[in-house]
Length: 446
Length: 130
Image 1 (tube, each protein chain N blue to C red):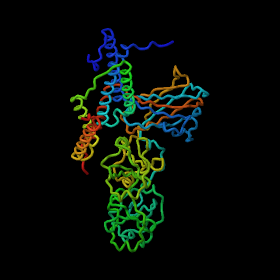
Image 2 (image 1 turned 180 degrees about the horizontal axis):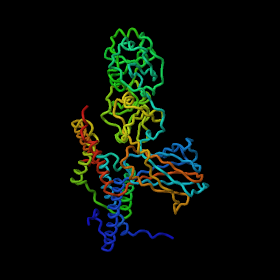
Image 3 (image 1 turned 90 degrees about the horizontal axis):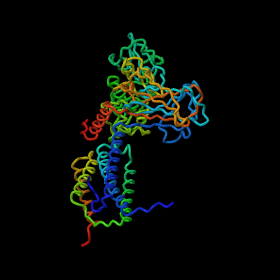
Image 4 (image 1 turned 120 degrees about the horizontal axis):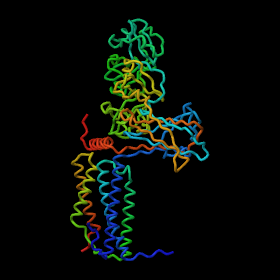
């Protein structure tokens, strides 16, 4: 055994004691190193919410709503009502330990239970009304021509009108009668003397859209292509600009578009840019690097930056989900998901890869029933195995907590754990390899 | 009741154990620095470097205090060549790694300038006046 302070000589008896203590110290350090390795390889993630201090920055559980949509108050759950809360966590975990810390004055539940499902938070939104064609879409059905103008379906009264306005027949998409029912019916276009709102133009290498009888210029070709196909725009010469007033407002990218500038990636939504906080969030939210558009300063200058988009942020407005089971498309708008009722309608909104989701995942629940803890009678806990979620897409766990009696919680916690097994070790090794690759592998030139 | 005051022999044992503890802490700190430098957050997401540095500082203070109480007088030693080379290599790896995303030639140049600065600062502060 080596001695780092060999200049200090001890009596034989003291030396024996020192050796014993030294071995114990090194053994303790070794066990500590093993424990730290265990924490690194099989990490656990802890989430909590204090109802005594609901504004605390330490709270990392998002309390969402009750069954009756009322906002939760002071940790009270009335019998028969369900409290919904979310946690966002990347990576697969083996189990979740949920603990309720009841207020001393609270009734004790005899049957409290919790259910959990996993997907993306935005995909678990309530379903809104179906959404029809994108503004500016050109459609035809049974020899009749239509344009979507201000979200309304407007019919060209005669087949000659679109021809007079300069549209070619190829620009119009043949659709079914049903596909025409998802946009509200607008007034017919009876004359060819002006262009309706939503009409698209290509003039002197720029794209424009008609809005309020003024031409609004797209900030770039990329911005136009994030919404429309090149064939949707009418070619006009510069004299057209003299005949129509031009708006000062520039038209930007489609909501949900991913853009990159100066090493940062942003999501465009509601006229703002959401900066993506890191690579893990980007991958965890199902985005594809091939969909990121490199843009110039002039293209992002029209936007204000909004708060960081992190793993806890739901997908913003304009995000399009595609279900893996039956290729249904949904678009996120204002806290609801809306069905895009046909492939054609979806195509009018979709100019990049959709985010893949599983509709079945919304029906897959894991459940457990709370039991009183032996050492603290105000604490109730239960453990949910999460193995059945391991192949599902999305990292948002939505919990619904129910109790047979009225209860009042002081706090609530969820502790995600990984079992020590070969599968989790392999997952750690792959993650490590990918991190090294992400940090040190040369980036692909665009 | 008064606790018996530690004998000099006990203090010496404690002093030697503190030396071992410091060695372990420094090995852990070096490995943690290298691991976190290579993969950001792999260690620091579990234990902060501030805590490690505070523990090392407290260990160092206890080591010197115990040595003083036990009347340990060690001859002043200059760092040996092996330790100097080892520390220089570790520092060079960490600096180059932190500059990995920039042009490699520029990173090498910055590294070289940094090492030269460290060398002359060391000379300025620690070299004995002749």
